[in-house]
Length: 452
Image 1 (spheres, rainbow, N blue to C red):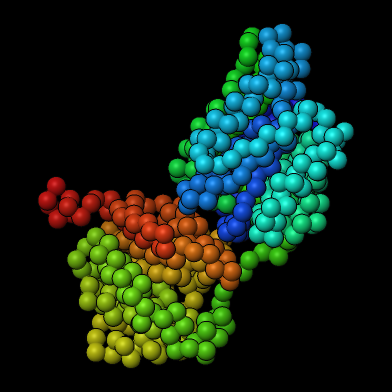
Image 2: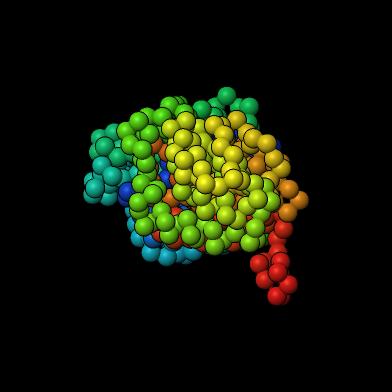
């Protein structure tokens, strides 16, 4: 076990470079049952509060299970007994989870704080009963076994063993790693770490939930034994717009390159039914309606496929460059737009950067989730660099999970928003897709046209 003083500041949060955290590959967004297991009341908020909030936002509340009563956090306190502290911590964890996800059930196992190792068998039996319901589809989110805290290690070990037994999937969240670790510490499993980008709302809700654990973040009195167990400097590690999780595989996701798309077009001329589905037709109209300007001088469409959106975009542009990595797709796009004189077609992999420029408009429709998070951040930077002084970026992506994709649609838009760093001028969210518009010109359409 790692030896540390939780009431000390620990490693400064700024010592963890954002560039290294942002370069981590993305955690797969869970699609089935999610059970968040905490060793103590507050672990669920610190380690997985963002995930709990993200799941609530899409109508899929996680289940929260707290193993101990948390009564040992203030040994020797002159103002509160362990029994009274346990009562307070029960109330705190319920309030915290309610901030993150009002519909999430909270199960309090009530094992004595500090006796996790001694009561391991009983804890295992309790968790087995809970996890046995629909285990094959369950994702268990547990404390990281390498976190340096004995209770976290034991609960993590129990969860890992139960996942193996029941066929559930395990991911683990670090908490004290941020306190005792440093980026170059050999105990940090960088090859196993995955990043979960958090929406702004989730970051805010997590901050509010942390504040609900009053006995842990504020002094009970002026007595030394009543000092908060969580130092304010340590808590800054949980204000990030990303949560880190330890996964069980070292194999990172990879970009889906030309061979993936070549295979798709060999099977079918229009693999995604872009030309025949009403859903696709409606989405294209929504994309066009979201464009802040009536017309653009130069535009780039990334991943044009068979040219269904290209044909419509060309009517709003003086010059349009349409790219795709698949030759078969480009041939169809060329035929579809042959009657237009303002479209150039280019076989190009956006992972290699933006071709040409500068552009008044860049359209990224259903392409971002074929890239890994680090590569998409690079693409976002190259797109920003290729924009004119008033340039606009439009992104539209499918939100439902696809096993092949390195990223989900929500993750794509979160990464693009961070990587572009541009004002948002349009946001449209449906169950099926996200549509976002960012621009160097932050004005609304009414202000651009002099109506406001």
